[in-house]
Length: 181
Image (cartoon, rainbow, N blue to C red):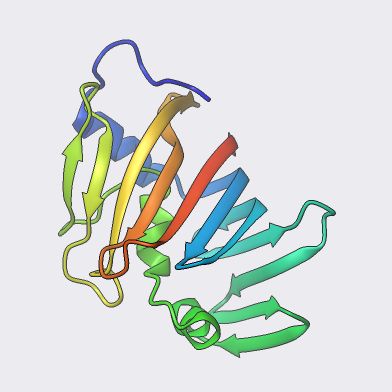
């Protein structure tokens, strides 16, 4: 895992560079825990603003979850079932009961806070943690960041954890092995 820059970065320039990243791919691992239930999977996430595809596969390469958002249509396939809607956040809530701020998460994964988010910086002036400001479904999550690596002159996190502040035993850990911009 990368360990970040040797010197502090220029935060305003970093945030502008992150805002300009509207196409990316992330590959790695994801672990999800809710109370005593846990699952880990291989992650493949592609974003081409505003569309995205998010896929989790198991050790054998079998798709566990495939969520696609394309031209205003969200389709989630899981457990041999198909769930559809026009808002990926609503589709995820329908299937899991979780309120995940999908649109905000597309920025958070890059280490880009929203305009109302409260955040702490590490000693290199990159996001260390983030507490969402007012937004639908955001209030229950806190994001922690680690292991920044530089990709095409932009510092991107390679490890982040989303923790449900109402249920501390509920969290999502993401480890990104490869970013492609």
